[in-house]
Length: 532
Ligand code: N01
Image (cartoon, rainbow, N blue to C red):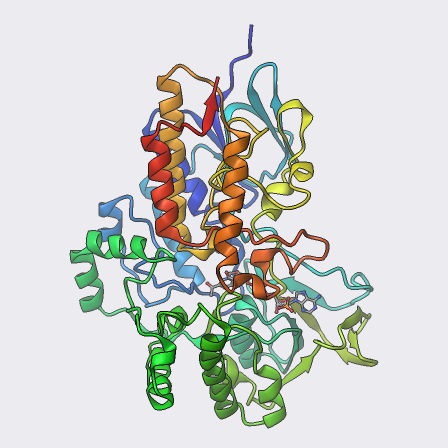
């Protein structure tokens, strides 16, 4: 006789993914236990409280669309919402849909084991709780396992250290202090201007210069907001048709970059630069198709940097090389201008890496820089990190870390063979962080709920992807990536930012094609999965 589970499902994570998953399970009469390592809901927006933190997807798009009442009721104050406002929104959703009751907070999953005999998942936490469930749903986020480089002497530094992805809730007062920021990706680029405003001296350690376009953030006026709200369904549908699941707020220029004269190109880039943010990549239809075409945009940005940054040597160091859009394009609020402040210094560590942390600061290239505080804006063990840190063991004792030792393999980015009834939301193999994450989250939560319901209606207890389906999906993900310029740089999409991580392009490129695939899988009654 097999044991009965405590609940139908365990949902790990109370970010936007876990919250909506919990809502759908509740709505469909399935019992669920949520587990969250933070003290409340919000996920990314609960942890990332660094100064300047804001979303690079416009507020009207970076929000749930499952409830029209919710999207009509909530008002956004800015074109791009800052972290405090997004966290307020997450709390509002949790209140409206009563999502907190089934979550256990301040509890971190330290093991999830599949019990072959009973076909159940046993999930335990560092607080001593164990829950047995039929389904395990990992809503752990794709950028939530922080990455702090293991510099020699880390423990020696006598000052304060912070990671942008785990920022103190009470904020940090840098007034009059000598501060270092290591890292110039999206987080560093957002944090540097406000820290520079407050700190006595700020030194930025840059290993790779990143491309950033001014966000051109501004208050969201009532007229714009009301117009979108009046046509929200169409607006959302337009977003879902875009390759990145957002873009209803800006227009894509279908023209070829090669068909424009130099003057036309400059004027067009200028227009998109002034519009701001991510839309810059939509300035020409084939901007991301060839290195040669892409270079026009790169040179435009470099010229902007040379125009803005007064010290020519600093300007050259800030000029990124390589393809724009290969790494996630950053958007900023006065990043380049910050380097004109007399209290801001740039140290290039591209050729001479940081050697060590010392009692007083940071040593590189034979020079010791002294600091009161060091901010690590050094990113994440993206996509796989938050899953692997949960110590997941599937059927027949197969460990996820062993199965994925050469890179993550799965079907649709949702299920990995050997781990029955386990689902990963917005993980590797799905559009994930290459698309509007809230749209991706809704899509995954709805697919998972429908699949569980279908399986139960057929009298099955067990769902698993066929090995052949997984193999062919991995090939599809790789083939799509190989047709793009994405694999040409050392990005976190490839795992290249974490020493020793397998170099595999992880997200699926193309949201609409992915959506079509999910629809086909449902229409064919999940033919590429086995049930038992
Ligand atoms: O992390 P990153 P992030 N020595 O990995 C450097 C999302 N996000 O937190 O490029 C010296 O991009 C590293 O250098 P290099 C968004 O999707 C969104 O900034 O590897 N430097 C790099 O400069 C984003 O892409 C928003 O050579 C070291 C930096 O640290 C993703 O999160 C805001 C180093 C890490 O950059 C991650 O962004 C924030 C070392 N040993 C984040 N190790 C918005 O919505 C690493 N670095 C706007």
